Length: 354
Ligand SMILES: Cc1cc2nc3c(=O)[nH]c(=O)nc-3n(C[C@H](O)[C@H](O)[C@H](O)COP(=O)(O)O)c2cc1C
Ligand code: SF4
Ligand code: SF4
Image (tube, rainbow, N blue to C red; front, side, top):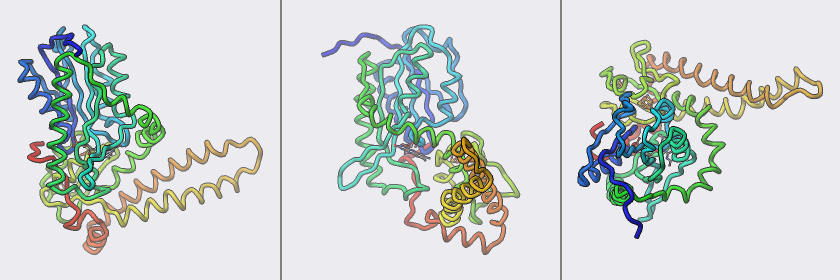
C-alpha cells in the first residue's frame, strides 16, 4: 500500500453552490479533516470571500468544490480562480465537481464533466499548486428548468451513496495519497469541449432569459438578496433576470411562494423563431446581398446569427416582463410553464441551509 507522504495541518475549502450539493460535499470533507485534527477554513465563492496568500501556510491543502454548469465549472468559479493567489509552497490541491446524478431502476447514473475538472486543475497548476485529488460526485441533478426535481426517496439514496464516496476520497487525499478517478473521464470530457465553449460564450446568456416571476411574487426580495452574482433586479416592481445570471437554480428552488417559473410555452416559440426561422432569414438576406466569389459567408452568417438571436431573445424577454402586468398574459405564461404544475418538484439538497 502507498504510504502517506505529507502531513497536512490545515485545509482551505473553497466552494460555490446553487442548490446545496457542492456545499454538502465541502462539509463532508471538512468533517473528515476535523476528525484528522486539521484546522479548517471554508470560503464561499458565492459570497465573494477572498483568501489572503498568508493564509496558505506550508502544510496547507486547498480544495475546490462546485457544480458543473454546461459541461464546465461555473463562470463565477473560473473568474475566482483566475484571480486566485499563486502558491508560495507548491501546496497540494484537489478539485471536486458535483454533477447531475440520477437513479433509474436502482442504477445510479452519472453526469458529464466536459471541462469542469480539467480547466480549474490547469488554472491551479499554472499558479504553482500540485494536484492530489480530482473527482466528480454525482449528486442529484438540480436543472429543474429541464426536468422536475427528483423524488425525496431517490434524492436521499443518492446522498447516502455520495457521502460514502466523498469520505473515502477525503480520507485518501488528506492522508497524503493521490486520488484522481476523474481522469478516467478525460476522453469523454474532451469530446464535449465544443459544447462547453458554446455554453460558456453563448448559451448561458440566453438561459438567463428563461426565468420569470409570476403574480405569485409578493416582492419579498429573497431572490434578489441571495443571488450570488446579483443577477436579479427590480424592474417595474418585479424581479427581472439580467445576463449575468449563472442559472445556478438557487432563486427558483428557494422562492417561498413558488413564483419563479421557466416559461416553457413562451421560450419554445422564441427559440423556434431564433434557431429555426432566423437562420433561414439570415441566409436569404446574405445570399441576396452578396453574390460575389470569396465572400466570407460563414463568418458573416455566424456573427449575424449570434447578434440577432441574442437581440430577439433578450428583446422578447423585456417585452414579456412588461406584459406580465396584464393578468391574462400572466395566466397564459403560468399555465404554459411546466414548472407551475404540482408534479414539477423543486430541488433542494436535504436540510439545505443556504
Ligand atoms: C444550468 C445548469 C447546467 C448544468 N450542466 C451540467 C452538466 O453539464 N453536467 C452535469 O453533470 N450536470 C450539470 N448540471 C447539474 C448540476 O451540476 C448538479 O445538479 C449539481 O450537483 C448541482 O450542484 P449545487 O446544488 O451545488 O448547485 C447543470 C445544472 C444546471 C442548473
Ligand atoms: S423570492 Fe419569489 S416572492 Fe420573493 S421576490 Fe423573488 S420571486 Fe418574488
Ligand atoms: S438569478 Fe437565480 S439562477 Fe441566476 S445566478 Fe442568481 S440565483 Fe442563480
